[in-house]
Image (cartoon, rainbow, N blue to C red; front, side):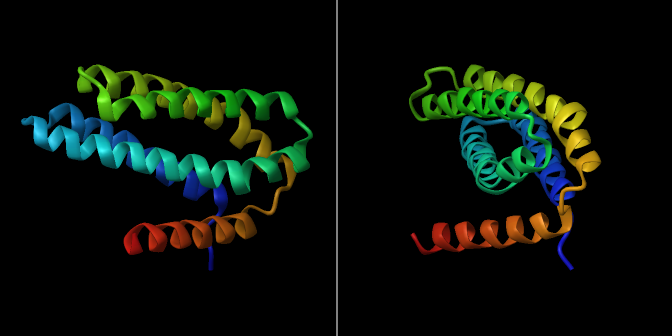
Length: 145
């Protein structure tokens, strides 16, 4: 049985929060670079499934276009920061900026969007299945590339 969509998205949040902690404690630049790549990939994948699957269903179920637009704006800000990572002269500063934006966004989702989604009667288990399927498709495509 598929996990509920919010549980899956929260698992992503926790995974990225842990990666930020690992990055901070990484000793050498090579390890930091590797972790930075993983962080950026995880955030990109998470944003993709939210934008493709969760957010449209949230908008349909709640009609809260303002909350949706705010979340999409925050996603774009993080995407812009991620795009700068490959050429960043100060990798620590680039990852810290991403971390601050991501943690802010996660807190807003937890307090606002996820609470509202639960109250709306969204089919969270069905959405969880769709999210898991899409993640697997993308992971397979990445491995084949």
